[in-house]
Length: 363
Ligand SMILES: Nc1ncnc2c1ncn2[C@@H]1O[C@H](COP(=O)(O)OP(=O)(O)O)[C@@H](O)[C@H]1O
Ligand SMILES: [Mg+2]
Image (cartoon, rainbow, N blue to C red; front, side, top):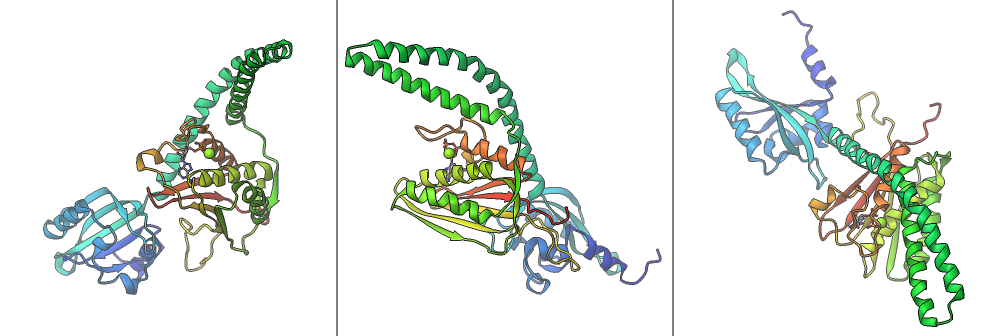
C-alpha cells in the first residue's frame, strides 16, 4: 500500500484512545499523545517503565501480555483497572492486546489499545440510579396522596380532643400522637419533593456566594467542634442554576459530612475546574470544562458495599435519617445537567464531588 510518509504517526497522535508499544519483557517503548493524557505521564517518563506499573496487581493482564509476546495471540476487550499519576483511585479501562510484528514479520512485543471506560461506567451508574428514583417517584406519589388525607383528619381530631382534655397525662399522650403525625407529614412532603420535578429558576450564579451563605448558617448550627476550610478557585466562572435548589444540595451534603463526624472535625469545601475527561489537544489545551464543588470530611467513610446504594431512596444508616438527602440532591444536580460522584474509603473520610456545567458565553 502506498502511504504518505508519517501518516501512521498522524493517525496515532489523532486517536483519542491510548496506544502503547510494549517490548517482549513488558516495558513500554512508546505511546501516543492520548496515552500521555490518559496516564498523566509524559513520553519521556513512561518510556522504559514496566507496563504493569500502569495496571497494578492484575495478574490477568500480565498473563495475557506474556501470551501475546511469546505466542503471538491477541486479546480483545480485557477489562482492567488503570493507574493515573497522583490518583489513588484506579480507573476502569478496556484493553486490546495485539502482537507487534517488527522487521521481517518477527514477533517483537505487543501493541496495547487502551480505552478509558470511566465516563461510560459513570453514565451507566447514574442512569441506573435515576431509573430507581423515577420508579419510586411514581409509587411514592400515589402513596403520599393516599396517606395525606387521613393524616389531616387524625391531626385535626387529635388537636380538638387535646383542647378538651383536663388530665395533663392524657394530654401528653395526645401530644405524642400530634408530634408523630407531624413527622409522617414531613416525611410525605419529602417523598413528594422527590417525585415532583420542580421547575428550575435558572440564573447565572456565583457558586462561592452560595457556599458562603450556607456556611454562615451551618457554622452557627455546627458549633465549635467543627472547623471549615474553604479552598476556592477565584477564577471560576458563573454557573447557570436554581439558587434555592442548589443551596438545598450543598446543605444536604454538608449536613451529611457533619453527621459523619459525631465528635466534630474538619470539613473542607473545594471549588475547581473539572480536570478529568476533558479531551485536550495540542491546538486546544484548555477546552471547556465543568466546575466541581467538593465537600470533604474526615468521618468514618462508607463501606464499599454501601457505596453502590447511596442514591437509593430511604437507605440510611442513621437512627433519625430519612435516606432522602442524597437521592434528592442527585435529582436536582441531574436536572442542572450535572452529576455527583462520591469517593470514600472506610476510616479515611468521604469526598463528595458535585459537577456543574458553567454558563457558556454565547451558548
Ligand atoms: N459524608 C458521609 N460520610 C459517611 N456516610 C455518608 C456520608 N454521606 C452520606 N452517607 C451515608 O449515606 C446515607 C444516605 O445519606 P442521605 O441520603 O443524606 O440520608 P440520611 O442522611 O438521612 O441518612 C447515610 O445514612 C450515610 O450512611
Ligand atoms: Mg443526609
